Image (cartoon, rainbow, N blue to C red; front, side):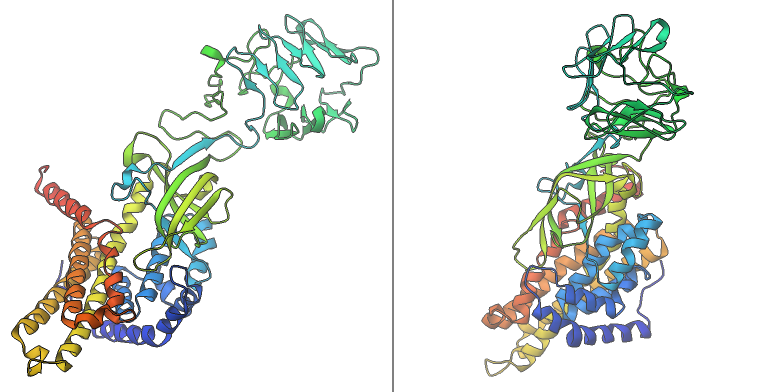
Length: 567
């Protein structure tokens, strides 16, 4: 990689950003409520065009923005960074529809984004996250549709009208409308509407309310009697137990026992006995019972589509990917908790990392884009040392589908690490901006402060400390921009350089701010002083987006990997 240096226009842009931050952003930051999302500040960042640059510029520009804003207004820097962190996965891994819906709003500052990775029991060890993404059946096959009990018989959902008696023949439940006699022929319940003779032929008994129309398709009339359905429709149970057909598809029972259609199936897929023909996932075994494995668990149908277990949860295919119903996309319910999430619980959308395949570590995590208004998603704010908007999120069976996935199923850790590799050097830039502000404040104070018959700067011990502060700050700056340049050039050692930059810069900023407080004395501890503010701000970057210890582990791993040996 070539030597790094800033171009004159970049230096001029940084000076302009520091001025904008001091004159336009800091007043808005001071009006904000501590610990809450400052939407006026976010909107101003959008009007200045800075949020849009998060998605149109590279890592070097991101570092220039973060360092310059941090120097004059740490709140503005943090608001900008959190928008980028939360929405970068959408920009880099989202579908065209996801990007079109969210990125313009995030860029304008009218929507607030958040990155939800950490959990109460999975902070530095992010691959140990436990937020569950439980696969769910499609709404056309809800949990209250007919299910199989441990004995293999099939019972109707609440409000339904049929059940299967031991041995597989169908019998009417109390109040039900039909049943089957041994051998698979069927008779109706009280009222005597029809019977099915040997071989599946049907006859209507006197007084019966059901009649077949030419072609065999049937539908329910207003009073529940059976009338002709639209051509190609097969019959399902309607509200209150009546039966209705949808065009071109066989029906399933909806949440209220009403019928819903499964597109693509036709009456030709079913024989006269009411059993599904081969190719249908509900094909009946001889005698009319539903095929099942031990204890009555439904098996895979003849098409190879995994069927539901007794709880209604689809099984996984051999690759470990949760299976989808044939008539809809894959669906999950998110259950668990996230903690230490910036902008929570006030953000408008969250990049959420959840476990889709248990027991597989980082390989079984999927990233989801979850709007804040999804049912079951709640949260609470946390009071922190530095009053930034940070909180917890609670997921109580929050619904998501394959349309919400960012990247690929079970490949979400790649989304997380790709985002962090970009933002880790810029965390270092944030730290460098704070260190530079502390250094400049120290130089001004020690040049003016009278002590021991002269100025503080005249004391060698003070002057040497100022020199050390400047030395470390400049070294950290160079490493930050070297890492950012490597990222923009696509260098292979980005993970190592990003970790080095974040580690050195955040540790340096802690040293510089602490030394500045020491040289200022008690005045620096007074509430509202610049250094009091920086002292609270500087501690968190050594922890978030990978603690210093994690950065050392990454560096060591990359060093040994490049040397061709394991540590």
